[in-house]
Figure (spheres, rainbow, N blue to C red):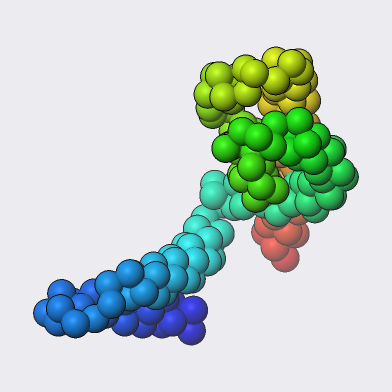
Length: 185
């Protein structure tokens, strides 16, 4: 059913693009937004289908089981670290609100998320050079978010992988024991 829905959505979005090219009176910006949403949802459905098909293969199953084993820990860690992220966000807004990058809570949040990925550090240093604590703030933010948080996320995923390796070994032993019992009978 999911495969049917995703293919239907792709077909609909392609027809919308095709007919919009033929007709010049359609509002292209709103149409583009609709098409992007439909294509995005279709890609989500295709991704779910791909996960189902790949889960049938033992080698890929390790990857998906690792992610599912560590998902709860990562979610709880994200909830636990959210006050720290909010503290950094509010402090950045209060210190640097005169800068365009930090002019609103939305801009501040988006800029700090970009910094979590390790992008635009130099631009932030340059844009906030007029403020006295900007170097200390961004250095502290980088240490906490890039080093500590990234390593904890990595640890959680590795713990999920180790659990899957143990579970996989147990399943393999159980299969071998069942085969031995079946051979004796």
